[in-house]
Length: 266
Image (cartoon, rainbow, N blue to C red; front, top):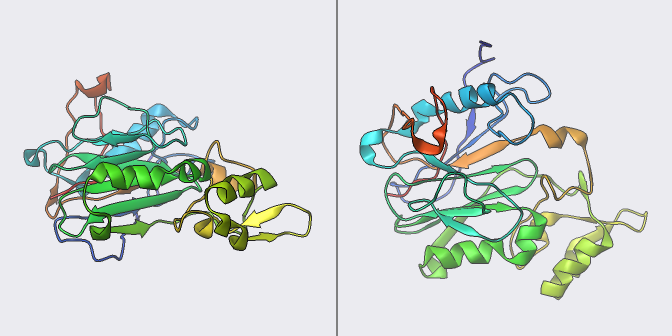
């Protein structure tokens, strides 16, 4: 079995979330995958070796809560660049959706991104959390609004953390994308610039109803090819992380199964 190039490294959000909400984002380092997926690829849908992907997910186990805190397996979404929101406490195996919320301790949400924008949400009391995969299509269709609505708390109590994503220097879009956003909000016209070749290059962080957006697999126009390899996950964990073991019957994943990245509340 390949050895990890180093311990996994994470990005920890700097935001005023309640103490019972914890978050992290994985990076590309510290995993087992060979090029072009090197090295901490946790996406099973990109052509990487499935066994290695499971091993990569196992490397995240120490950063999850103990099973004694209840449901602690993440809900891995089958992302489609839509607006469907999944409740992590009620989700089936690999549900189709682009956002997830959790209202109970130990219910785990996760989104995976390449160059799309990962967005984490929680209310100021730490009663509910959410994670959204914000590609331009989903963002234009209202994935953030749908997530906040599903959280069922006053919007004025919700805070957000915006994770790493592609920027305007690497992501060009066609006129049809600009027009799609302008149909939702005319102010989008003020947030685009031409690259001189009649193709507007969009700083997606400004192209929406005051939200952030970036493309991802399925949203590609013209971008640097290396972005296609990246698969990162965003997660939050409760205050007392511990060893994690996955129930072998969940999703019929063969032993030793592990899918330990997620969003938690309380």
